[in-house]
Image (tube, rainbow, N blue to C red):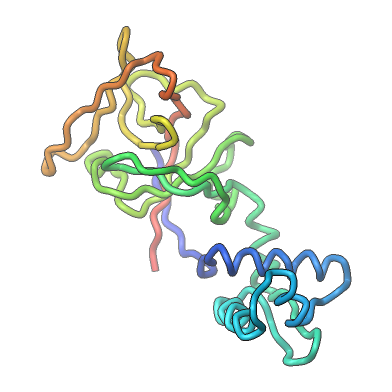
Length: 214
């Protein structure tokens, strides 16, 4: 499984910052730069709250604010990231210790150039936990998941249990699935689930891993 390293270009946004950015972007596409009053009325917030969110968007490099009534513009850095970044979506988080909720919203994109040949259905999940370190997957890594490919016994893959996702080495047995961790030092135990259980779904194999470097 290949592992790459990359340097993130821009700071991630909170949900509220993301919503305001999308609103601004839509208004700019309609050739109607929004005023702070219009933003406040749209979201039902005080203008002071809008000014604070805008200041974060400026500081994080997503917008430029010329100081006029309708002077907000998208930054060149953000526009460049969007142009390059319409690649593989990052869809939340996946646990490598105990399963946690996989939040089905896009947190960002990974440049397609890092994973040439990845399928159109491929997506990226962020790993939390240390149960797969012996297989080279560390806390904070991003793993590439390909749901269009079959998850074969013995592969590292992502499995959904109810609405929770986990990454483990998956062994398909006759009536059950073994989810085996890879951290001998910590002593994690293999977990067994019913193979045809209504709340169990094999998502797909993990075919790559990205590690942040700063």
